[in-house]
View 1 (cartoon, helix red, strand yellow):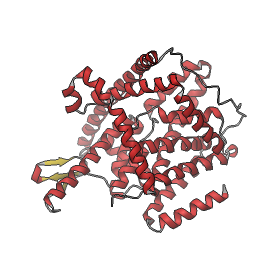
View 2 (cartoon, one colour):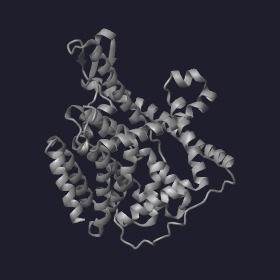
View 3 (cartoon, one colour):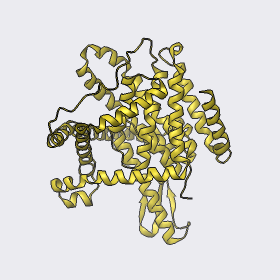
View 4 (cartoon, one colour):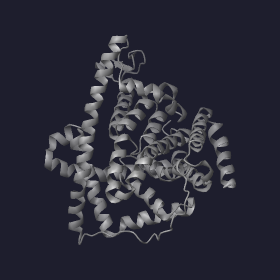
Length: 421
């Protein structure tokens, strides 16, 4: 552990901080989160530092390969492109159901995102029937257990969570992988074990009850119905509540002379320190803080939707300035950017490439208020006798999950290098 720590510290100083001294703020963020979670741990005296250290070390090494080596970046870029192509096959079923015009013309949530969930669940069900998923999860779980010294059960759970969400880009694949050891590390700080856990055999993994591939496809699609319905109604409900809250805040703001008071505006200030200590460019801190607030209080789907607008804005802005070859024919209007020659307004402006990557990593997780209800309801149905215990830790688990994502954002901010420049 000491040798690895010295090696990583030397690399950070020599290859990162000497070239990019501004990235040092991300190191402060990492240290700050570890100290805070240790101080407010359920039982600081029982913290086992081996899984904590190796969890963060593995998270750093994963990021090191991808964000600080051109071959690692290009490899995951290629992998991200292949995964995107794979998930885009969901358009075939969506086109049959909704029609070609709705799917290809309108980037609506119901027509583009939810069919991907159905498709992904179906493919996962087939891989589970064939035994492929068990092998992947088992081997990766054994690797985590060996490195971190965690039990088979929690190692398998951490690895399994990598495969339960959508990964439409190279950075999301990386973030999902990095979050597995980070989640274990931060959980060991937040809620250390006070009892011995029984070492269960890795081979005792469930097998599919489907009798053939056709049944696996059908059961996978059927099982996705509850998930799709839950996602759809949650997104719709949160958007409705968010609009009500914003209208109410705007009404109160008008009465006290504050223009544009909204939930997003409040989040942009409340979560500003989080964005800052992840290494976000100062000019983008409020934008990233707003995204973190949306993700925490609603869900990651809405947060990524807002992030996609900012990413699209940057592309439009770059195309505009390249075409007109001038910086004097556009201007800011509040946070918006106005492009007069094409009569277009880029709402909320643009972010730097570094801030975009940090936001992508920081938002990649299911830790939000809605997920607490899903977790508590699902686990209570499986083990009703432990409902009280689960209710006591669910908030702490949500906070720990968010911090694991923020730590991933910190490392992305520390090691980020734009290979396009």
